[in-house]
Structure formats: C-alpha cells, structure tokens
Length: 162
View (cartoon, rainbow, N blue to C red):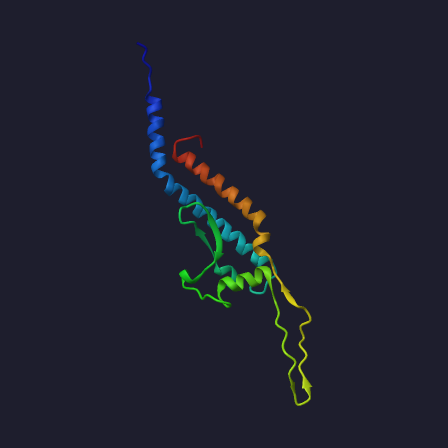
C-alpha cells in the first residue's frame, strides 16, 4: 500500500477552519476601513463643492454604517437612532436639500400701506451641490487602496510573502 505525507494538507485544512472562524471579524475590519474611506471622501467632496459651511456641519453629519449582516457599508446622515433630529430640519433632510437642491416657496404678494413686497430671488429652485455623486470615482479609488492594504496585512498575518 502506498502512503504519502499529508501533513501539508492537514495544515491547509486547519488553516481553512481557522479562517472560517475568523471570517466575520476580518470582514468587519475590512468594512470598517472601507466605511472610513467612504466617509472621508464624502467630506472632502462636500468641502470642495463650494457649499457654504461645506467643511463643517453637513459633512459632520455624514457617518458610515455597516449592514446588519455585514453585507455592505454606506455613508449616510445620522438619524433618529443616533439621537439626531428628524423631520424637515434634520440632518437627513438638510443633506438631501444640499445634495439634490430644493424648490423655493415664493412669498405671497401682501400689500401694506401701498407697499408691495417684491422678492429678490428670481429662480424657482436652488441647485444641488451633488457632492455624493461627485465622490463616487474618488471613493472607488480609496476603497481599492484600502482593500489592497488590508489584503497585504492579511497576507503578512497568515505568513505569506511580504
């Protein structure tokens, strides 16, 4: 009967078992890194968009969120679960207004003592800054760089080539 040395295969199978147990933790690490990269690029684009206070309040409201089953990561405004205000003046609504624009309510013409109010604004809507849409390309590059760095770290941890 022929015999062979299967110690290499046993080591591989043990390594795969360890990897399966470690998988959720490592996946969470990767998604955390990607979420931080996405949040950083969204804040950079908001600051570069020309929006008043583009480097302050609105980018500060944007936080990354991990999916409940670790299936995705996304950047979104803080909501009611995080203790933020909800409704038309909350972070989500204001982010939507600044990202996509919004209509302007024209004042009613009220006459008081022979004076008719004439609004200075001459447009029907405010244009959006589209900082989320503009951050897509740079976010992909940042996520790719983070993924490569994470893979290199995992390779070094598992004893692969440096």
